Structure formats: structure tokens, C-alpha cells
Amino acid sequence: MANGQVASRGPRRTSPTLGPSACIDHATSARAATLLRKADDLLSGAAGAGDPGERFRLAYLAALRGAGAVVAAAELRSGVRPRRPATRNAWALMARADESFAVWADYFADRSATRTAVEAGVAQAVGADESGAFYDEVGHFLHDVEGYLDAEAEPEVGVGG
Image (cartoon, rainbow, N blue to C red; front, side):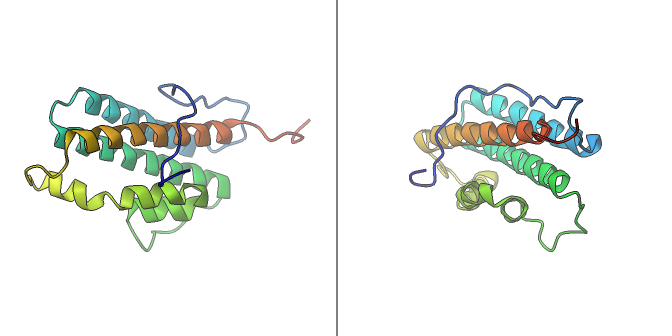
């Protein structure tokens, strides 16, 4: 990982495969899968946005949904649903839920001020190149989230029969 970026691991599917053989809490896995689907929808909307600010904003919202999917899946892995978190910051919650996403959490947290500026209507808060690069990184992030959810759905080797 150079400069806080993660290389793509190939094309993403539109939703994770959550098989029936996995011993998991289906409500939590469904919540994580739904959040990832919503993230994919938002990222698709960002692809069609002509304005760089709107593209950035939609991609950022997609990343937030991806963070929610990680938190939901991490709750599933731990087997314990936490009480109301001390923070509602999605990036802090994601990094706490699974430290393998800490670099992503830092990357997105560093761009929170840009999102705020875009939403406040600050002209030229983000340029076309920066918006495009951010969009690409969100795609890589959602690919990693999908892999995380897919790994959650895989039964452990040697467990069960």
C-alpha cells in the first residue's frame, strides 16, 4: 500500500455471496449485504454525476455505507453486539471494528472536510481529477469490503463434520 492507497484486486460483483452453509446471524449478514448494495448504488450514481463535487459527495456516501457494512460484519464475527458506541464517527467505528480497515478509515477521515465543503456549496471544493481519483479509491474500498463479507460467509475449514 503506497500513499494510503490500496490496489484493486479485480472487478467487483454487485453484491456479496452469503451462502446458506455459513453459520452466521442472518439479520446481521443481511444488513451488511444491504449496506454494500446501497454503497454500490451510490457509487453507480457517482459515475454518472457530471459535477465533480456531486461525484465526490456520492462516492463519499458510498464509502460510508461500506463502512457500515464492515461494522455490521465485525459485530457478526465477534458474536457480541456492542451497546451504543461512544462515537458515531463511521471511520472510527470501522477502524475499531476491524483494524485491517484502519488505513481506509484514515484515508476517508482525511477527506471529511472536503465532503463538508462540497455539501456547504463551496465552489471548487474538489476538482475533476481529485473527484475521479477519489471515486476510484472508493471502488477499491468497496471491493475490499465485499471480500470481507465474502470471507464472513465462508465456513471455517475443519469446523462441523
